[in-house]
Length: 493
Image (tube, rainbow, N blue to C red):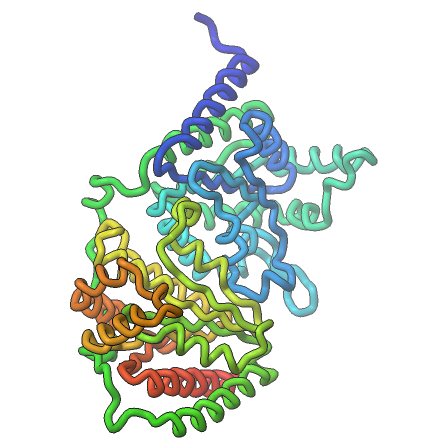
């Protein structure tokens, strides 16, 4: 009946963690766990993570210690390097610092002098972090944040001991000494960061790092609770009832889709001449020095057989195959379903000087998934805000974002379906799902009109293209892309 010894507690906790980890891997629709470990130097971050890896099955745990972004990572938005490292459902990822690293590390001015932490303008970054963690939580990711702290005297003592031995001297980096000299400022910044981002769905746990065994036990118990919570499905009836009301926001976009341009259809000869001119114009724009500092994401949506693939093909024909990629988007694969829904789009973002064409895109969540009831209403309703945030991050990084809706009439779609069915070389383009989707034509148009109205923005505009005449649609897309690139590159020159 006496108090349990620490060694017994460790054995019991280790067994519980292994059981919870195994249960998470086998639970249907299980979420994942992201454990973020921050702390001041010598507080025991590495030791704590090593201890957790000893207690867990390491085959199903990934550890990420990302430093300042390298040249490749700087070519994409700041959060890209974290998104591509998120764990799938049933797995654990441990991050040293994660998206808090750039805020909690020292900032240096142009002369190389370290600025005080009080000068770091972190408010906007913290607001973005709050939105990110809210989205991850709603997608079933348990975000658990641990900050390890020790007093200044203990920190200095540990750093001196590490530097005194040739076997451990390498563990103390110049940045650690800099942070130790600014112990009070580090603590103030960490306190502000914790207060600003502590939320019920993504809580902070501030843990004393003085006693190594007690520290590891505390962190282990925090992780154990997260593993048990992650077994539950991401969306439940209770969370759906608590979902906030969706605030509608309308922009200056067409109230109804026009499917055919004014005037006659484009003749074959006029199309051939205009296509050559526009493709040459597009190619020259992508070779400008200003575009080498940017990239482009062009997303194409529309009904089946609206001509998305044909429009993309005419754009791609003007480019070197090494500077673009076409991303065909269909129903998420079983692997993709284990990640947050935007993960599969983040991972295809282009490097600077390159273009990504999305043949269907992240708008599937508020189009086909909404119309066909493939996603609970609580999820597709919140997707509008998440899409706006995603596109805002792309634009702030210098990515040219442009979205196209190719509007085709029901009659023209049926004619194209029948023509494809009659051609053995194109019959594969029409499958039973296309005919099912056709029965929901009107619902798709309403969903598309709402999506365009709620996500049209200057930095990520929509262009609605009349697509009953394929030649007109392809030229209109090329012209719109060229005009957008010219405005953007000229403004940044």
